[in-house]
Image (cartoon, rainbow, N blue to C red; front, side, top):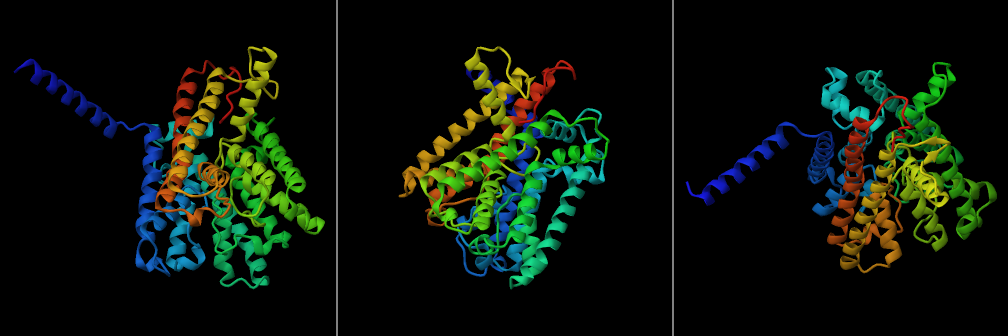
Length: 456
């Protein structure tokens, strides 16, 4: 055998070994990505069936809706209520459910954990994403997540049903169930062509949707800790829970105040309705649920800027919402403050944060901005739209928010594919990067008494 042949054989052998390792020993991040991509592919195939469509749809539109549903984004290129049959709507609802519930329970691992033993890989992923304590039974935790989610969604549907009946909504029971699941999973899909604009003066409908969205965005970990604390089962709330409960309401209230100041169409309404509209729209952006009770296409630049920030920041790390997460932004703000003061430690709520977590927060921000920049460059090449509107759509897709300035439906095939990629990355890519870094940070943790290990 010649030296060239020997060298080639060694390279082939190494490639085979790497491929075997990739297939037989997949990492947690790879499993999460494969799970979501599988959901998207199956959803695309089902929505492309003639039985799912009221009117013929292009393949790219079926793909767009499937990815938007699984990523719980809510951006649409066609009106779901007018474009899909009941079968298609059921498929969309199922995709929203597996997308939202799958994110909270690490994709398909939850269902296996409910009926069988929790394997080492499932347990590792669950503990990394949820920051589940070593003493917590992961299988029991995942079961409680599923039960909590289904109970909240059922309660939301029962609350919305009579309200939709009173409003004269056709098929009120189905609309109530669809809206409830969509709200809790922070998906923002609606069977109404104007989202929730027709309910802008109905505080009960907006209130129920807001509560569902907030519970989904906070996540089971936060809700569970608060419930245990109220019942006296916990001496105090965990660090991440306390941070989320301070940061998220503050962000929502700040967004409400700024929208009241900046947006003339909100101020023109009667005062109670104006307050409800501003609060709902701020909450919708901050929880990344993506419903709108006011027309977003005509918002003034100052109001759009408010939504930019809210969409980018996002919700809780243990919930169904997207974005960078409020904990990540809190750590970044603390890093800026510590740097400005010349301090060596980064402190949040007076507690020092591990250096690994600080690096993770900075890395996630850098990755998100890099992806956003590349996507905007591609959209600028393929679409003839104002840059600020393209930026809004891109932020909404990457943050899996679903709010739109009316550009999504006007995108060409190239632009739609860019947004599809952003929605998938928003649910898989940044999450996967965060999980990978969190895994290393957890392995390097010295002890339980180390500085606060805030979930990002």
